[in-house]
Length: 164
Picture 1 (cartoon, rainbow, N blue to C red):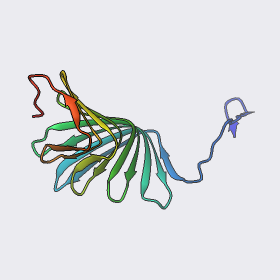
Picture 2 (cartoon, helix red, strand yellow; picture 1 turned 90 degrees about the horizontal axis):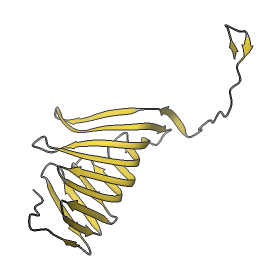
Picture 3 (cartoon, rainbow, N blue to C red; picture 1 turned 30 degrees about the vertical axis):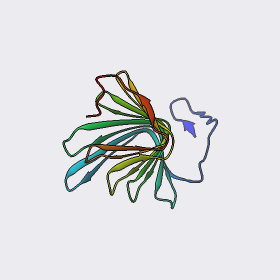
């Protein structure tokens, strides 16, 4: 390459070619709708579309999930994998889910688009005000605003604790 203004060769350093990527994006924004109703809005700082695998590897992910009542559930994670065919999503590394004043933390969480649910098969901690509950697994039906915790469930609750 030559800089046409000064006629000096341009040196390109530290070029990395990713043979598995079909496309790399610095920013990704995607909205998923079902019957004209928004299920979720996803943003990622970067996305790598993987050749022949129907997947996008995401970095620094934020998602807003919507309930039937159009309430917002916010999710953040450092990494994610979006199935570009089914729109199912796997989240990993410091996953935080916030709904009103309740905060759920885990290291891994999956979203199932067909059933509009999120689930974690790894340890979860749910905090709200001065209360906390932990469990081995969790599933949330987003349209029904219902969460089920299972396995070694324990916690501490303040007098004003409610999950509604």
